[in-house]
Image (cartoon, rainbow, N blue to C red; front, side, top):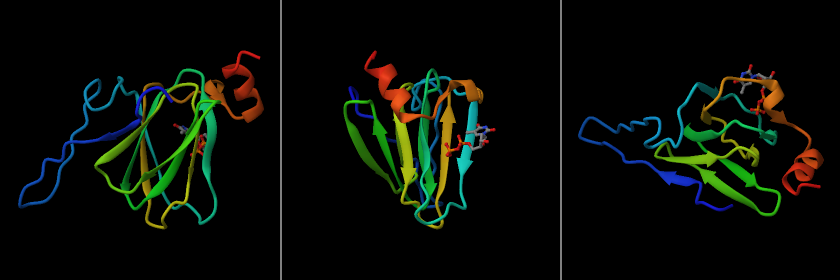
Length: 134
Ligand code: TYD
């Protein structure tokens, strides 16, 4: 992984509580076209397990916790998302897996593209072939 994908946001807190603001091309390193969130996950069942040809994503665990592994075909690193003040950038052509969700986890994902199934690479062997130019 070339650049550190884990980012810490500025927390705008006062006596009323905390607030985090995310703007495209500022805190989030792209224009976002889509937001989705994952919740009600089941113990022991991972999600993701795919890469994208073009879609970039930014993952923020806004409640609870989970782990995310990012794999560029050469190196795989696992990150813990356990507070709403951190976010993880998943670039295009990075294999991602989300797992170890707490039962109260809500994982929000911002993406730079609308949903296109054609943009998914769901087969790890195919992903490795593409990233290693095999
Ligand atoms: P999937 O990408 O398999 O979820 P995850 O990566 O979390 O394991 O998506 C599950 C279903 O939801 C699948 O039928 C595609 C659909 N979907 C959309 O319609 N729009 C979206 O933005 C996303 C992420 C998924």
